[in-house]
Image (tube, rainbow over all chains, first blue to last red; front, side, top):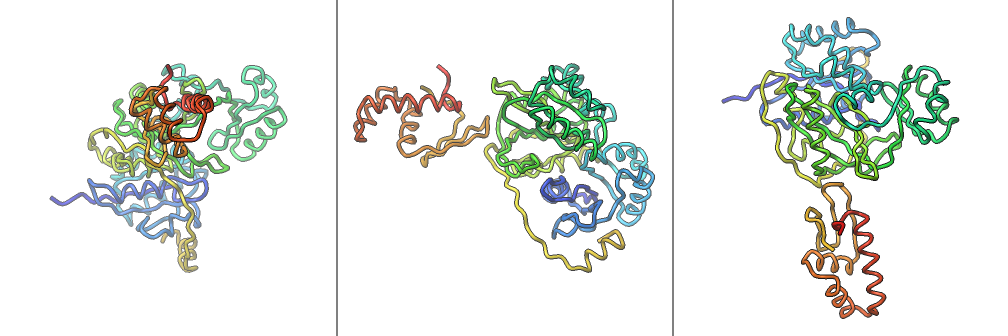
Length: 348
Length: 81
């Protein structure tokens, strides 16, 4: 019996110091056992390393930033689809997810499948809504509040106390130890990401992450827990190790079953010094370290593709514990013509 | 003192706790003590072996073993009694 061959478009090819998940997702797809792939990269910038990395994307296209609006994105995807006849798109950035969710029906009409969270899942897990989320699903979350005026820093100083986390709506998080730092970070974040800014209680402890996949019916198809071993100055994991913590994995399954989560996700957890887990953030997409999950036996990109194609992959059971991922930098030598072609024509 | 069942200990003195992801290295004496703990040997027998093998007074060895046990407890290598 011949294997299916899917053409899959993947975003997030910026394999930089704060990497997008695209390259790791593609590596997982290329190792899929259930199907063969042709990979179409979707890039926002002509210097995203994944565009030029050998063996990653078969062809890559530039796409417009989310700020250009969904019409511009749709138009571009239609043009790409005429060339490539896409089966699946896997978007990998928080900031682009909303546009792709909006286009889900239109793309389905063109025969392009995705497996994304629902609008309500996407919204209620948002950093701004995390305290309500924790209350609704019985999950410990740090106290927090979204503010739109720096004067509110004074108002919430007492209840949250210093040190305090100051977070952007989409990205960036800083630890402020006093009011001066808090105001400084507030300004820094609003300049880059706009309002609101999220103030969050600082939880002392050790950070753990889980990546997983929910089938939308409450079943956990995959869940792999990791402890960061080496962190960049942006707080990104540069090395991590797979761990087996029943409490953490039970909590993950509770998250998936109670929210009936649909799609890939990452839970950022903090284990406090008294052994309690606090949910710090839910990223509604596959994380950049997903290749560790593939490496320990849970190919999340493959299972997500099967779900997108309407199949019902069996939940993964165990995974290898004590396996590390260690990221590295590698200088590619790229011909100027390739860079020129991609910049001018928008595809390579 | 009982080493938690899930802790992986290699002959080289490398310890890995799969539930927390923490890893540690101990020196050869530490590795010997851990091997004895894993074999279920009681504290007084461990102390006897250490004082017989190494040029150390019983009092000093007892103090060191107590300190070592404290560290193992702190890093969740052994079960709390």
